[in-house]
Length: 379
Image 1 (tube, rainbow, N blue to C red):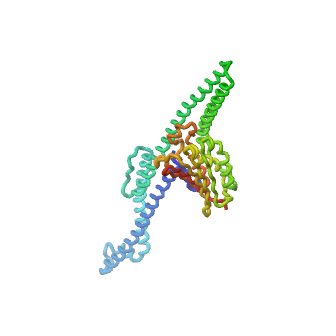
Image 2: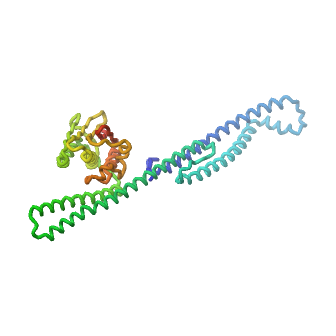
């Protein structure tokens, strides 16, 4: 899809903004040429009048010549003659350039139909070179947006197929173990507890997969709106880290939180911002080596605050690192993991940070991966 841009206080599609820009370029060039032609016309008239006066003034006139009345009238009414000739010249120039303008617009309108076509470059006359470059940039952007939309749609479809296939495994296990519990009347208490524990685990996995389907639907159907309030950033992070203790313990991970200075306040939507840090910490837990440590560092930097979530695990290749914030994109190891998500967490986190006028990026080198968020501090 073509992303909207701001124009006149409203959001309009890119191609409409570019269309107006092309129109302004043509009109600016058109009126510029008309103005220059008008000035040149005046200069030529003045020069011709001076040359004519000098040339015809050297002759002795008797008043009987056929040209005498006309030249005498011009000599007596020089201002009227110059004004009349200027208006006539301007009319001729206007008609000429108006026809040229119509031809320009017709050529541009024909080229506009090629914007959504194949990758062939648009070619216009030399006078419209700037417009040609402008339109080719628009065409390339449209092509890139279409490719990105197709890739995102394909990733979503692949993910839905993957989730639908994976729904069968836990569901089959739950039905199987519950059937055994129903049919085996003389089963031992220990074995019964084991079957119930496995059924519960598979049912929880089934719930996670269903939640991923809902996550995909919510991301596509809702628009994120912020409800801003001032909060203590360190308190929020302390609570999030505390809530992750069971997950950290399960994988044998440690987690440290460092805040400099204390009691940093930001103005944000608390629920949305909590989701950002929850996604980052969950991502760190998922990709950390067992027994390693996750570090969350917060540092005030003038009018901004920087939050870094660092974990140690497999290095993310550069080509994959650049795509981790794309919708439905998941690393291969996430697809193989039972805790792998729908590939929306980081995409949603990036959108939330953007709406808060902040920035987010990732770095990965020598087994160390760092996600960094920068946000404006509350005044």
